[in-house]
Length: 310
Image (cartoon, rainbow, N blue to C red):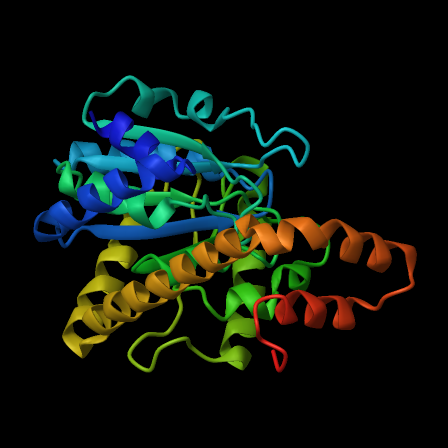
């Protein structure tokens, strides 16, 4: 039932939108104060392995876990491999865990277009912890920070110049930084990398006045340090609640969600308008051919709707 509900809200069909809206509105009173954690990192950092290890730890503590794994999509077909679930062998076998792979579908920020709605559905279904795994392709991985309570950034040890990982656009949003693969011969390099990140974060400053971003080392493969990682998530949540920041962040996220949906629907309506569909090909061709600048092209499109000053 939950999977079908998610499919409904992910649908782009107009006839499904009203049903999805009614469903989400009906579920608002049942929205639980669950723990929402966004997890990002470069490809190969071990996001899925980390979630499998962390999720097993959470299930052992009595939690019900939902994992929203976002896969890169083909720019040609819109499809994706959706292979993250195969790397979560333990969680896939446990009925207390719900794993939903979704294609990014061209959405920027490393998340699927309906990740916010899906989180609400999972919480209403009784899952008290929701982990959102992003695509992990670069600095655009910041949208997840605007829809979760704690933003966890995973790093690799010994991947060349450690400071290459200090990207202000993503690191300054991190609530927790964790260096994975701190096991075997990588242990010393992981500790060295963590020291570099701590020094850089000291210069950048914290995201919130009540919280200083910790840098941890752990091993998603062996599970060493995973419990301490979760303790930091709980500590961040406790301090957020005490400072009133959690409630404020959730409220701001709801308003931002509303405007995101509004912008999306305006674009859809404009593209579907008969007056635009008739003249858009000629404008696009002129811009592509270099006879019309993109700036004037945008102005001409706006003028078609009576917005000459836009």
